[in-house]
Image (cartoon, rainbow, N blue to C red; front, top):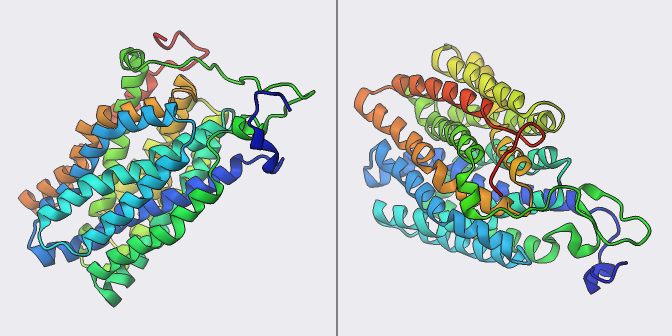
Amino acid sequence: MAQDLPENHKNHPKSFAGWRMTGIAFFLDFIQVGFFFYSFGIFFMALTQEFGATRLGVSLAFMISGIVGAIFGPFIGQLLDKQSSIKPIMIVGALMLATGYGLLSQITAMWQFYFIAGTLLAIGGSTMGGQSSSKLVANWFVKKRGFALGIATMGISGSGVLMPALSSFLIDEYGWRQSYMIFAVSILVLAIPVVLLWVITKPEDVGQLPDGEIIENDAPPVAIEPQTEWTSSAILKSSNFWLIALTFAILVGVFQAILIHLVPQLMDMGYNIEQAAFALSVAATLGVLGKVVFGWLIDNFHPQFAVWVCIATQAIGALGILLFDGYNLLLASAAMYGFGMGGVVPLNGAISGAVFGRLSFGRVMGLMRPATLPIQGAMTPLAGWIYDQTGSYLYAFEIFFGAWFIAAIAIALVKLPGTTATSNK
């Protein structure tokens, strides 16, 4: 091999390792999102009963976690772009998450829940999975980035398939405190060994190229996409950045709000916690399919088209959840909503990567965190506040539909490479 390749590249298999990195990202996202986001609605009622908190009060923990994650996002993103290895960043994140869940099992007041969610869980989540796992996949794929991110983020929806029911079972059997301790131990014995043994930061580290491209005639690796590195100021001056941020602030904020409040909402409608948790799992199950389908769509069709389909399917499903009577119709609506919801995360990463490239992917996604915070972070507590004031989620859903319309317009204005100049590099 060429002299500029690492000396240890011969220790690695010749088969393309990118799909293995995708599988690792799947696994880490499953743990990170499943233990916090998809379990939050199940722990929701236990926490309100334990501490006498309102739904807005419990929702604030989610908002606080988002605020802290947004504050630290740019620093984490820059670190991911600059460091030669993602592995130590992921390990530190896993240790923070394990410590956080261990401490949650011991809390005696809601302020302690806020503090832990806003420190150890917020930062640890972004550094073990989230930003780190997305950066890992973006390093390994260019032409197939949308599809690869779709597969990787299937871990997010996959956690939604299993974790609501699993969390409900754990709470019933062991209580919410012991359930959080089980989460902590699981991270220590499952996530950390996977990262230590198998993570490879980028294909060039083992003499490979993104997408499994072949290095011919013993030649050194060559770039297969523009390798300009964007500065933070150039990113922030780009109208594309702000249009993408607005679009996905709305999409992520709305789906978080709907899913976080779905279990309490369905219980208000007369369903028991097992039925409500199953509806959440149905939405997440179709989200698994949605991630792959929308990842494929954005690689093979106009990116804006993929986003519009994503918005439309969510809107149809949400309307059904709000209006339909009968459990079977509810499940069908949850399935439709979940399918569209599944496209949000891979579409965000794929469009951002297409506009800004893989060298600056971490920085872009990090800056996206504070840029999206005001809208994204407000949606979940807003829905809780509306319920506390009115006894219904109806007005919250009306806001969600208006926000989706704005997102559809914003994404239409994004200028993709190959159309017009996209930036100030």
